[in-house]
Image 1 (cartoon, one colour):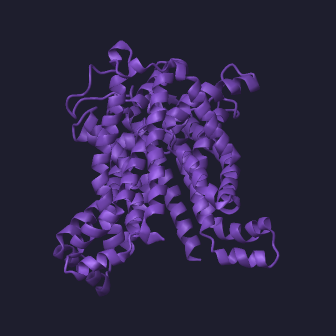
Image 2 (cartoon, rainbow over the protein chains, first blue to last red; image 1 turned 180 degrees about the vertical axis):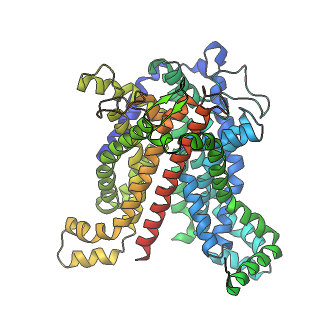
Image 3 (tube, one colour; image 1 turned 135 degrees about the horizontal axis):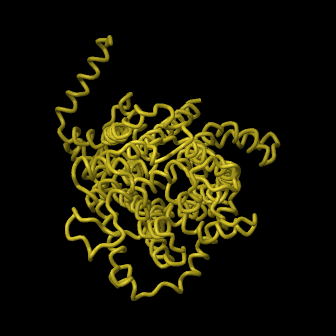
Length: 260
Length: 300
């Protein structure tokens, strides 16, 4: 455990040595002039769109699994498929996204392809998190609504789902934290090293922080010091999202009155 | 295939229940989405890789040479590189991960568990491109210094960084299983005069064995598919490495760096998808086995 802690603090300490390279002006300067603006906004575009696609599907899937699933073989297969989807290496998700979205469906190297590809990575996280959030809501809430004559769906959507909302939001944020720095999945589907300004439609390619770090180091052989600023920004974004998710979860676990 | 009346009835009543409630259909479709995606994934990756597979057969995996000019694509050095790096990472990550899991869920005072678990979770959420970046910044020069190498980009470097990325998986999965061991068992052992360590060794670990095994398998799946960090720090040399201090190329790293150059529909392009298919099947098998192991352990 000590090693984990040391590793974590070591990472943080090292990143902070690069603080000097971070210049606030660069955050709002266009990439054409050496700034980071399009990369930051591009990264945000990517994860927001992906979360908007994966969120509803994931929550519906979780509702089905907790409230509707008959619990037979089919449910087991669905469960297994979600675990397997979570375990697919991101590079394969990228290959798949490229063949299906970019080429087969003709979306090309675009924001849209990136959204759909990243959504596949968020989906299992949202399903698992929402399932847990829905499961801990007492069935008495739903039964009260059912007793008043609500249909099953009405009862669930108006009571269980609302009570589970904080947990669901947490799982989406956690999903965002996991894909905000994703590189392999957007490598062939949505990103380019430089664009002129921000994408104006979902069919245009987009810049991303993670992609820039990777390509500059691996393809162009630049020294890591050159991308220190980009790495720091990415680190802050990811850590901020995970921290928010973690704190929210601990807070609501303590707060939910029906748990105590 | 003979289907009994009972199964038929079950299936038809299932569809009737779907029909009577339209919302149920929507929910069901969302839930089965993951299955559809997995099948599509297998189909598309296999379709693109089929050309190379029919041309090379098993040589795609066991051939020694990857040569663009003579159009011969054999992935053995890459397979070897992947296995070497993953093996090294697990050798480091298993003892650290399992002991951390035991410590956090058995020894650590209750109020400290949430903060420590949160830090481990943060470690898991750091993207691989940042692990690669940090590895390049710290571990690579360190390796070059320690072993007096011209370049610190070696299999060992990749294994070290990869172990850091695998530990959170092992800790969280096996920690969950360890804390699920019934309290009665532990108290019975303690009541018989066993020390805390004896209780852990002879009561907790045997019960949690399957869960720990599953966590290691999941860690393996994560490590073998890791792309970005590894391709940044392992040196990217497509040869059969002679030692851990040699540069290596792994399958995912190779796909990531070569897809951009391969012409769509060419033999090389197809061979890259072929390698991807192999990787996909390996992770499928490992993840499914891990699930089975966990479920079997829980049932007992």
